[in-house]
Amino acid sequence: MINLREVSETNDMISKENLDVRTITMGISLLDTIDSDINKLNENIYNKIYNSAKDLVATGDTISKYYGIPIVNKRISVTPIGLIGSSACHTIDDFVSIAKTLDRVAKDVGVNFIGGYSALVAKGMTPAEELLIRSIPKALSSTERVMSSVNVGSTKTGINMDAVRLMGDVIKETAELTKENDSLGCTKLVVLCNAPDDNPFMAGAFHGVTEADRIINVGVSGPGVVKMALEKVRGENFEVLCETIKKTAFKITRVGQLVAQEASRRLGVPFGIIDLSLAPTPAVGDSVADILCEIGLEHAGAPGTTAALALLNDQVKKGGVMASSYVGGLSGAFIPVSEDQGMIDAVEAGALTIEKLEAMTCVCSVGLDMIAIPGDTPNTSIAGIIADEMAIGMVNQKTTAVRVIPVIGKGVGENVEFGGLLGHAPIMSVNNFACDKFVNRGGRIPAPIHSFKN
Image (cartoon, helix red, strand yellow):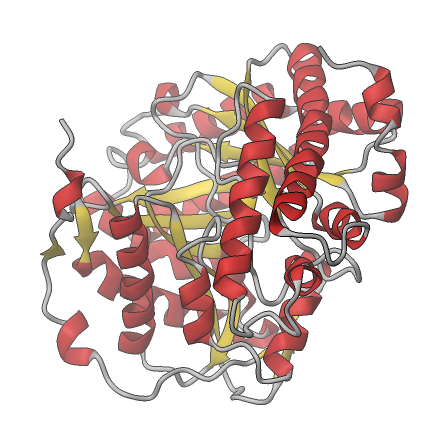
């Protein structure tokens, strides 16, 4: 049971500590829109999304005003377009036409982003899915609100190295086509292993085929709240530290539960999950890196960083599952570089490298996120970075992701400004040694031995 007394307890969290509901995301199934005629398919997609989500933004705004809780984004996720377009799409331009339809309906209903321009190819690619992947650069360079993701591996199936190698080319081409905006297109593209079906956070959101026709998923974020709570127990032992994080995560999740249930009731759409993820913003005091420093590190990246992040992630999850019966998505701590001022400071101080970030992804919620790299980084090196991160996810039975931005025309030591929630980032160095012969082998890396659990 949730009451207004619990909401009133969060007033300071909202006004002083950057607590917000990061997103209400409506998941919409497009399976019933499939048609072999591309024009009819686009018409069906537009109508299904518009009719389902036309009241989403207004409802979110009403709930925000009623409870005084900031709701930063309203978003939509749809069934992976690699599946939906398989009958009608025979060229790259066919798939791009769907991306433009998604962009148009997103603007018409007023949401910030729409996710699901996606392909799930962990074990292999159909011709249509490969076509969609090859269309991504053109799709992202010709739309504003469309988000794209490609799942190239899983613990159960292994890693599709053909898809990994292709994504190296796709990311670089996307960077080239959007180079006038500091390769901004790459901020809307993520490569995943073990992608969840119910993630409300972009760019990895899509509406899984196991989901209902429509669903409401809510993502809550509050790194500033956790940091302020830890300041009050500075110097205490690990038991006190963990209890503080857990109790704070519980309170944050309750806020999300309230918003999710109210949105579900008002929209007449079933409630799906709460994703309690400490997702930072460029705002001062809203940083996961600052939490790690409060735990006792001089900078994120110092010795002990991975252990501190593991502790944080685990306690956030424990607090969240006590607050809601339906915690899902990613849930934990995000470590995007450009969106976290503390991470940026750590990079600029020389404390944080891509290699250290990779180690941290073994215990965080996602992976290598929002990292700007030199624009002349070889496609094969990008594929190698993806392969490494996918292997971490596959072996550790967790979601991992890569969202890197090769900024065309810029190199190490320069900065790039993306604006808004995407922030800004120093361009980080990439290991210069080649991996061409490895990523060009082709085929699939088998699933690990512990995947056999039937």
